[in-house]
Image 1 (tube, rainbow, N blue to C red):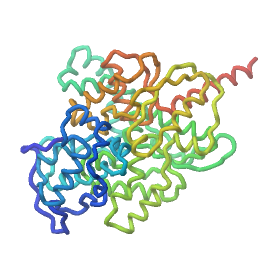
Image 2 (image 1 turned 45 degrees about the vertical axis):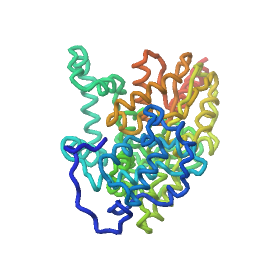
Image 3 (image 1 turned 90 degrees about the vertical axis):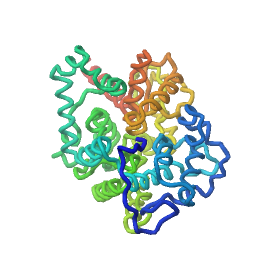
Image 4 (image 1 turned 30 degrees about the vertical axis):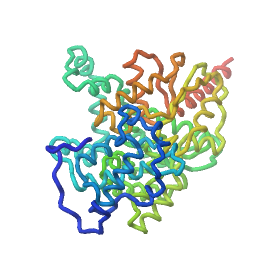
Length: 455
């Protein structure tokens, strides 16, 4: 998403209070860079610095650039925009930083300034507007695209496109993505539209609300189904608010913080009656927990966002904290675990999903070196920066143990990216979400009980 002369137009300056050469509302927060002493502890954690060795593509380099614009030493221009948008926003640098400098927050705030000062135009602007404003915030349109994709997969068009090599008219990285797209099924938001509440199995212990997500519910509705089954199995009534919307992560990552705020407000209202909001996508969960950052200049909504963020829980942590039922059926498999960036670095969740996997009889865990290293997905980074994303993925796949049969993780973007790595590098591992494996163990246990009852 680098800024090119024919893709942007210079926007008029804002009359709001400025911070150096940041002339718009919601500039980068000075307190976020105040503790950075440029010690370099972040360098080895940064995937883009690992690939380029260039200071401007390191966390401390980007912090220095962001601070320099605030001090009036640099302009908001292409030279500033390129390294800011080249960041994967994986948050590994904050984990490595002794002072906990929030580099990810600074990056997102700086992107907001860039997109206000230099809006995308041309085909990039049109594509961005179509998807970020025209599709993702609207469930009915997203579901329509899902149905079209399902028709493509089931009507024979996909086979024809591949057999005739028409598919190769697209850029190579999109051809690779098409090859690993999961089979589209009915979104759970549609399936349970009239249900009101999905009742717990057995004794009801709690009632939770599920964020179905946008891409998750279209591309990975089977994971949402597994999440519902696991929750109800463990005594949870599950509600699916129909007025929920996209979490806004893709918008904020792209610098469209205004749309991010609109979506945040809609979700805060949609889940206002819920005590707990369950999320099974690491990127979405991290975004929901960071809603207060979007309302730094709006005290009323910041307070609402803080109350909302306190209710958000990743599915693995929720199950771990509330004492889920340990499965009894054996799933004999050798597995490794990939830490999704926005789960490990963004939310500090590492132990819980691993413990869930190890609680399944027959599961053998094989350690992955650098398990919390980014895979290169980073929202839509693998589309906007395919070369860098590909280099990061190659590095990631070199650390995946060859002897494992499955790679588990807790984020849909990572699942697609890692599936592409498995295909591209001739591996044969199955990509699974942590909650899926737990669900399979429960289902196998139930089948065994049915079999025993007929003896």
